[in-house]
Image (cartoon, rainbow, N blue to C red; front, side, top):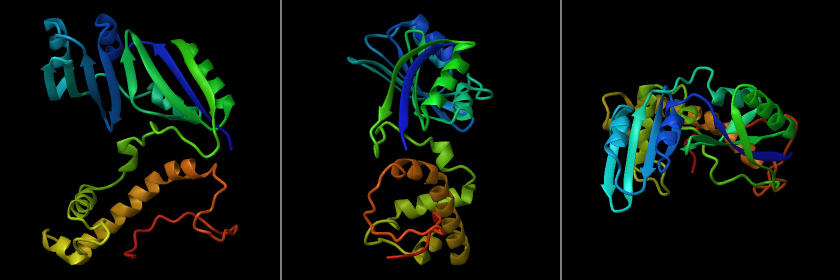
Length: 249
């Protein structure tokens, strides 16, 4: 199976792209997170009052520092609607988006992974119909490899988990439940909560199952091109991927 990586830049109406056009030294990295965006903004030198005012108006400032290296800001914003967004166009053409989106000097820079070169061409035709687009590169990836920048979006990994399932998973992780050897037990974890052990274990097992299931597409994408079988698994037609969270050694 061949994989293709395409990188391109586009122009269309977007407040972050337009901000980078007004301030050419500014670089904005954008990650999608559920119903908002997390933005990392960097600019060398001393920022102007106009730039600081525009950043303040974008959303909630999570971090800001100004030193000899320049400006560094992390903010959460909801200025760009995700409805009918470009990321949805990627998915419509079977292309996997690689975050972050980079806004620089009035351009939005994107990178995608595709299973078929024809999907990349179809995506290109779709985007150039209503946007300025400049393809920077299109390469066939070596079999069995994926770029290290390929990150699974956080909201995809934790999609459908309830608040209690997320809390159980975080508690188990922070208390060393997944370390070898384990530093805690299910009983000890449950005693730190207001629920019974059986209830806590149900929350944790469902959380594990959902996370592994959500990560499955990225795992299969990473391993599908490889012919190696390091575990010596005996494969049959009836085999199917499993995402259970059993208490094994």
